[in-house]
Image (cartoon, rainbow, N blue to C red; front, top):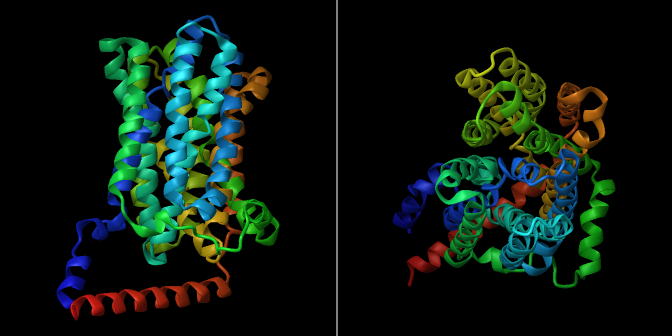
Length: 441
């Protein structure tokens, strides 16, 4: 029995903060998100090159983001009812089927209405897959390890979208062309999804998480009513919306800024985007580990809110003042990517704020993450005409200051802490009993 316990403690995955039974899920998620992120840095300029206006591109991304928001919210209650693994299967097939429709009937014939229809439908896919896995992590991971596990989740998520996805595109486009690169993203997504789902056997993922008597209507209502039953979830959802809204806005406006004003080529822009989010994935891990040590609120408020309020204008103004200077632009991008990563501890904090309703709490966080995909482009659509890109930059800087203030209100109650301690004591007792029984066989 002691030998088995020692081996478990010595597991490399556990030592670096990954729940060992979910290791292949993290690897599959990374591959899936690489495929999803292939188009991130060049879809907007590709569409503009096909004759579509920047307003049409922003509208496409905005409607897509609404679908992502809806799906992100649904990932919580559906995981409660069906189990996270089944939700991930649904998300994988939605992504694959509607990506084919998007490419064959939308992009290739340059049919804008079909692009909107297929791309919007595809937007339902990746949140079910990714956030279904996040619910699985919350259900199977002890509270002491949640910060690190959340860091690894966002490492895999943003490691693919858009970091390695954009890097892959920068090398693939000159070799197989833009359409060939789009098709390669489909292959990466399917391989990653199958790796995660066929190689991960942790039992909680296949089980219904809510009590047997909870109906679909009750689960859906519960994932919304938690906003007023526990208002801290609403605050966290708004903070999460602000977190990556600038990222999705920048995917619309920054390709033009860096290729037409700063003077970079498309390949340089894609490589810059990869550097930005390489910084992001590294600091995803560091912020999760720092949250386990210093507390998640401090990391989110200071590193995330205040950090991004400073780094966003730096990422815009410094490259403009020093055009054609790739290293300087990369340095500013690294600061920006690091500040976005400092919001990661929210994913570990929410299951502690609402330990009895982890999936519902995470569904609000997922709703916020999904909302950022359309809020960012919507801000561009609504305000770029007001004062250009510069006005959009300062709107985001102000929103990040607001997010820092709101984060201070997200606290864990004494009752929630007591519930977590009791639950983990029961789980530890169950593990020890299982190991004792195995040792006696």
